[in-house]
Amino acid sequence: MKYKHLFGPVASRRLGISLGVDLVPYKYCPLNCVYCEVQSTTHLQTKREAFYPVTEILAELDDFMLDRPHLDYITFSGAGEPTLNSSIKEIILYIKSHYPEYKLALLTNGVLLSNDEVLEEIMHCDVILPSLDAASQKVYEKVNRPQSGLSVSDQIAGLIKLRRLYAGQIWLEVFIVPDITDTPQELSLLRDAIQEISPDLVQLNSLDRPGAEEWVKAASTQRLKEIKSFMSEELRMPIEIIAKIVTPPEAQAPDEEIVNLIRGSLSRRDSTAEDLAFMLDIHINEISKILRVLSAEDKLQATRKARGVCYSWKS
Ligand code: SF4
Image (cartoon, rainbow, N blue to C red; front, side, top):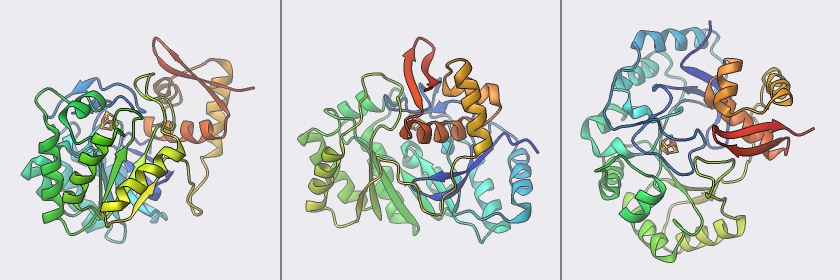
């Protein structure tokens, strides 16, 4: 069966061997982050939609799970924001009732957590991984470029409420954009917000491969360590740096067949991640993860062109 909604399993830095379930089309999101590795948001919205028949997604899951593969997580993620899918609760309940031995994770930008209905719908996930990159409206707008009218204080309030109502694990990702989100003032506000949210874990991230905007640079390891140390002065939860590729020991290397297809394609002509996904008929998220690994192995040359970030294979 050819999958339209599933990708992987991929070796994920945060979740080990993870089967991705993509609930929204490319690229629906209430944010348009400057660092987004799946490039600019084309549908900037908070409006929730069914997008696909639920039966279509569940049929793919049933097919994939037939021989009960080894997975650390089934993960809602994708080239957009999963909570925009108004059928998410039905899908969560189906997975928990049909595949109770698997853990379920939700990667979310956290915007819709200020909506009580959404909060109630995601309660059965085992781990929720929301993001919070800024605590002031000015920096939020500069880095996350939200749909007009969204406020970071609502997003923070939603995260605080999530903590109050949700018994599972919350792993909060903080993406550092040097000189913007890591000024002393912003870091101090962020630390206060995180204190109030009280997640189980804070994960500091930074750029791995070209983001939506060329000017975004990666934070150095030294800077990330300084930020971790600053946060640790006040915060009592664990804080880890996830910005560099750390391959979980049990994780699978990228599929060799797909790597060969990518190599063949990029040796002939440079392409964006979206071009590759289309040409090779492989999910954009799977392509993105493999490009990240190949970039870390210094096998790719990335060049920004009018049509986006183009990759070529280094000879
Ligand atoms: S990084 Fe996530 S939240 Fe930001 S624009 Fe990309 S998909 Fe949306």
